[in-house]
Image 1 (cartoon, rainbow, N blue to C red):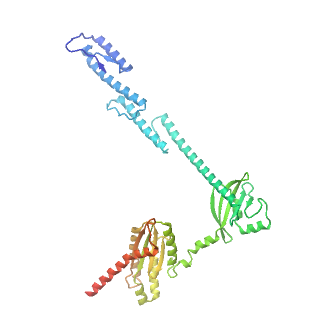
Image 2: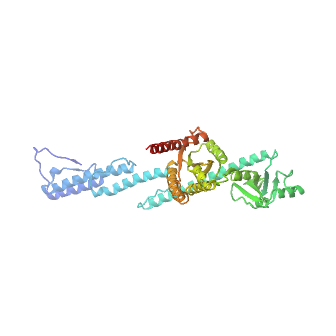
Image 3: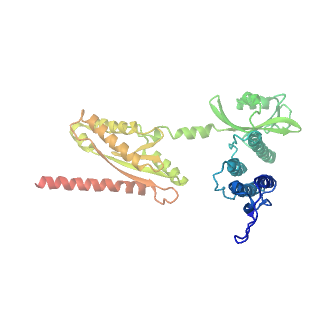
Length: 432
């Protein structure tokens, strides 16, 4: 507000009350129309009206601030500070300002792919914003699905191209192309002519490939499938996918006989890889298993166990009692670990545990539990203090350069130290 005032040394005639009221009324109209241009000579007013004039001056200042604040908001300037005035006239604009800043942040989150943002209490705008984010979410899912379909189709085309190239050479696998509508084989790499029955050869082939009916049933609902099927004592792996074959919808099946592969896999579980006396894995299995583990450079934890008292029990109670003692120890260890954990007998009274990951503290806790349970159970059978020692090594697969033997030797270090300390204590005790 710009108040025109006269010097105190120049007295002037005051307006009567009715004229002062008219001046104030006009001043109020000017504030409502354009607060920047409103003028009032407060010194000219009647004394009874001056307090009202001063209050209108404060109203003009408030109106100017409101005008500036609302103008900046209308221009999208959300960085300006909230008005410090506590007037209730600012409440609506302050709320609008805060909502606009929050909506701006939410829009930024939506642009980053966060479609969980929702706006409330803004009427139709809330409905429009929430509908938009939901549509964006749906559209993104559609685009991703389309991209995945395109990627799968590209992969199928690449495989189809490779298949056509492979047709030029002889392969051991069967390669069958089945018409989707007729369920008939329209191409087989074992047949010299497409779509032509080869008589006795096809009959022989059907005997050699007993899962052919399963292949004909596959409808191609999955874009790509690798599956295994057993029949007649043999095992087959089929790779199946839909294609267009000579303008018709078809499915391709590449079938390999993996019977020997499965037998070799099962070979790892046969008696050759188990300790005859205890039933756990043996050193041969441990060597082959750790060879793969070390080659794959994965993290693991190795625990070397040394069972004590076997020779003494064999000497005092017989080898059968010693075997029972060893078996009870093995059973105690197996109860505290998973079947998927590798537990092997290295030799005589030496054993080894291998667990994936860095789990030294877990193994230490398990060993304490095993020791307590083993001693408690065994003392019922033998008048011998049943115990064992162990050493643990955590291995970082990427940085490790040690062999299995070197790892076992490192894990045995604390066992040897423990034995030396115990022998020294026994010697000191005998001395006294």
